[in-house]
Image (cartoon, rainbow, N blue to C red):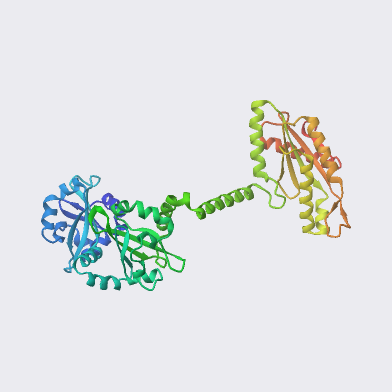
Length: 447
């Protein structure tokens, strides 16, 4: 086997079942699970005839009919012989492996020895079977025509029952959480045909629920009237989190339309996502949009204005005297001042305008559809007048704090064609307002 073939075969090392690659009937490569089942090392198995590990007449059938079995695509039950003489019942699946070579086959063998032996015991001697299954560590339940006929001691213990006889005669799906009733009641044949282990939840007598892995075996072939249910407690098992999560999601999707609890969980996740998005785009102290959200809205307004020709304006506001208030009255008073400033700003503009806090004491207002020079100047003067009124920030409301506002105004399209340029020119105009004595405004195109 070359390096490329070995790399392609590596995926089989993750299989829980025997998997090997055969060429002309000989083992070319085999996974760790298969080598352990056969009782030999992977290296020593390479080159041996695969059919030699099966008891007669299966060894002859596999030697002569491997190609036909692969073409039929059927899963066949056979007996496998380990190096130490142990026999195993396995389900064999043979597939062509043309990606490796035209005479290559991939053989997968699933060990069903324990399941077969339990089934044989049931058919031979009822009393011996009861003793056997009562010694098992897993829940074993027999059902005939949907009704429980037997529940072993381990199952009664898992369900927190005194004995299994109290469940005899009840529908077998009452062993499980009510959400699984439709799945077990109407999809039992599908679950049997899938021939796989799947997660579920047992409904315990004390009202609690227990996570289990479930296997369902039909004792009468495809009729599925007589079945055996095996359930293993997996609450303390070290199961791969990803696989368990995906399996649970599969079952959740089948019951989510009638599970109120799940719907509430989905709604809460959406609310949490919305809160996170709001936090990411807003200032924590004032709850105003932050710089990122402001620039997004400016870009959207710019795109609209470029199509419609409508002007808009940016007002860059820097508070005068804020540091003195913060230093004299403390940071808490400074925070209260910023909150009150944001409230007063909101009374000076329309709902469709955007007010953002982009820095410590810096605010920007986006005035859409009202960006003419007179309109922007009226709003700027209103803000100057509003913020000049005294602020009462202490509990006793005795000491008044006074600040002002220096405002720079830029307009589209007069002062720029992109968001960054307009914001920069509004910032420059604000500094000109400060140079002019503060507590006033300046327009960029008048500088």
